[in-house]
Length: 429
Ligand code: SDX
Image (tube, rainbow, N blue to C red; front, side, top):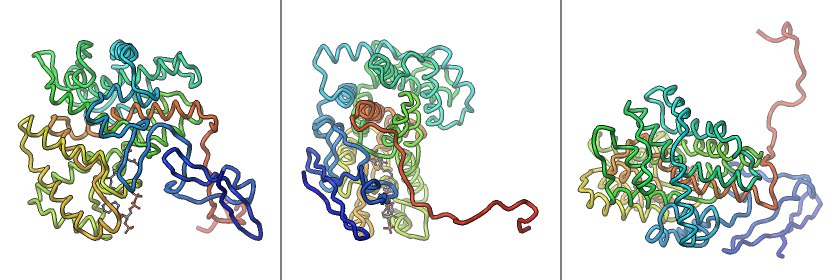
């Protein structure tokens, strides 16, 4: 075991250096405060490993992403989303009988309890669907009290199946509520993404057949969003789960963290950005200058990443799929041309190159969602649908972690000192 030596204030202390299976190294600071009376300071945790994990590996320098050791490119080409969900959660690709049983369980639980429908009527029509989905997911804990024990294998399995099975229904119902249309119940003869598309776009008045190209494209996007190691929302799910909060409550917290425009909310912001460039006469160069300017709050949404300092491998796959899907669906849009032009200009500009800012998963995904006629305020809901198995896998890994402890970071206090209570009469007016 390698060691790191810390010299401080006339003291010396050695700390073990851990090595991961892909060669990443970390100083084990679990005894730092105890040994030298110091804490580490790392706002945003850019240099801090919160756990050991066997789920997803990212090499940000080389633009590599693997789920349980399998490259994302192979899964994108050959797997289905539910197969990938099984891989992430249970650590292996399912054998035929396992996959059959898993699909049967998912199909058997797509319906929502009839009382859950009443939650939707309480929301205003223009409520953002992320608010609705996080509320309804948290509410499931009230409908399945027998599935709340994070340490009960049966309970946990039951909660996992219900979340994966019901999330498309919850999401589609939030859209139907927002447009005042009747809820379309799941059709258990359909596959996962076809079922979702039907619940989104069918009406009781006419037949609706989901387009197989659209269903397969959605399945691909869900695979690409399925996990991404310790990102903001996954770390949120882990932190909430570390207090032994139930899975429904932990996932609801993850949905809320994902909603932010710096995280999963970026896919909606990218499309709004592309549409504003198109409406404003399409000057891409002018927008890039705004995104670079410190005096302007504009950012090139969908660009940059805390870990990838190279092209996000997911963005590469989605960019290629854009052309194929728009072509197959016969969709014409200027937004793809604008996005490609933005990328071209940015990747020749020293501002982006020097900061190693490349397209991330959100840069092109919205163009495909729009081609599938998904409304823009549902984009981040689809990100959550994709990320659900990743959140579940990390929550489960945490509960079984031999290093398990409640998450509770330290701080450096920089507030006032030596103050005393002043009676109200002595306080300055
Ligand atoms: C996701 O963590 C994950 O894995 C997330 C995710 C997942 O799958 O879970 O990959 C999904 O959230 C992707 C990211 C989606 N967000 C966006 O596209 C929003 C735009 N991007 C940025 O806000 C930013 O790049 C972040 C939030 C993604 C990363 O932020 P960091 O790592 O904290 O970097 P930073 O904000 O400190 O930026 C470093 C520099 C700054 O300039 P200087 O202070 O050095 O002068 O780069 C600049 C930033 O101003 N910068 C950008 C920029 N992103 C960073 N400038 C213009 N446009 C941008 N998009």
